[in-house]
Length: 297
View 1 (cartoon, one colour):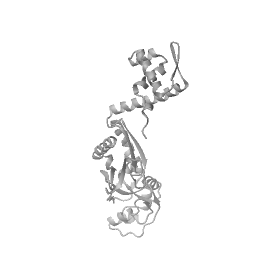
View 2 (cartoon, rainbow, N blue to C red):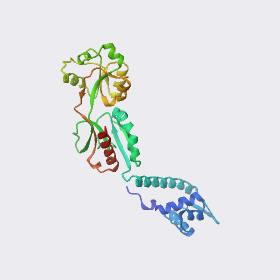
View 3 (spheres, rainbow, N blue to C red):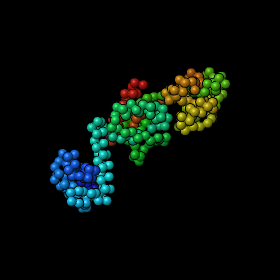
View 4 (cartoon, rainbow, N blue to C red):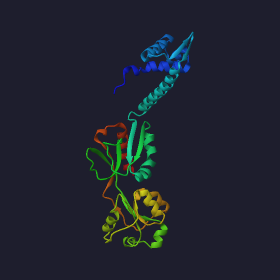
């Protein structure tokens, strides 16, 4: 529903009112605005007529805000500050704006979040709001502009940008590996295996790739890589984890490879968005930045 024009005074009228309300003096307001006193007085009168109420008590040579004028002055001051801030941000970065991004929890915290300061430094006018999504996203019913997706680029009516693939490794604590004397893929069949609910057949794929016949596999089930990694670090078993998401743990030795075998995932990480968002400034800036850092990776 459109807002009636009488409730949308021009910024020149609002600015004249705000400065006069702040200085409580038409002469001072005129000097700040580089206008004549009579011009400021006319603008305030025009605003009062448009609103249908008086904003000042006029007492001889002085002005005093009415109670309604005081409240209005506070709100108008905040509104003008927001407009000024938005204008400065836009001038500094014409592609500025807000990007609501759905992320996968561990990918978001381990890979994306540490890199975001670089993006924000290059695009100071853009704000990114992160929403964690474990389930499939729906651009039609959710207020998100784009999403980080792991899988295949098979979403209808969506644009995609490949970010990266992944290699998963069997990882465990150093003590666990020593205790179970792990060296080969076959050795893993005799240990507790940790499973991820979003990839229930990962271990079957791993063993099949390396020519090992595996019986029905059992073990603890986790909904996120982060909790599976923590369980592995605590000596609860071996987990199949993307090597780039546990890089720090491997470098610091709190996780080690249970054996040297790996599995390259058939699925990949993508940035995806509704086709109608393709020319949205913040998305284009974010997409370009991701393209650069993924190339550098």
